[in-house]
Image 1 (cartoon, rainbow, N blue to C red):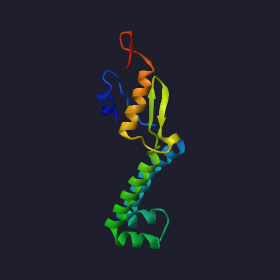
Image 2 (image 1 turned 180 degrees about the vertical axis):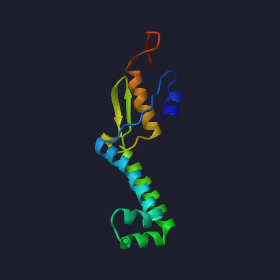
Image 3 (image 1 turned 60 degrees about the vertical axis):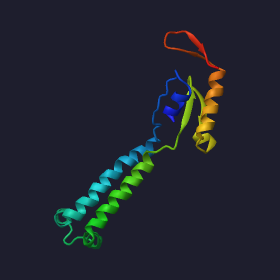
Image 4 (image 1 turned 30 degrees about the vertical axis):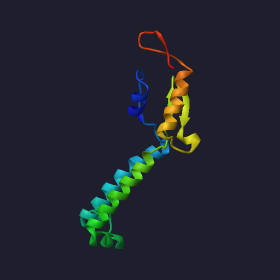
Length: 141
């Protein structure tokens, strides 16, 4: 979208940023890799890990996990990555011009089309006085 706006409105600067997810989701997303590595460690070295934790024999789930090592590791990896992506995503898409919000995906509950975004930005710029880098006012029309 940034390149499209820069091509449609020469002279504007488009700054793209990621909107951070809420803090609890970000913290939980940091736990997911620990879980993934833990599953891999248990599958690969459970026979050494469980006796050190005080288990005489490993729990029954360990034998089921070990029976299909590749499937267990692949599932932990894929599901963990999907969960981490979900937790890090905020779902936000916002367009601001001179710090004024002109479109918000969270408020509208939809993503704008290319034509709609061009129209919204064009209308806002035609009604605004933009200051260029030299301090001179430029009127967009």
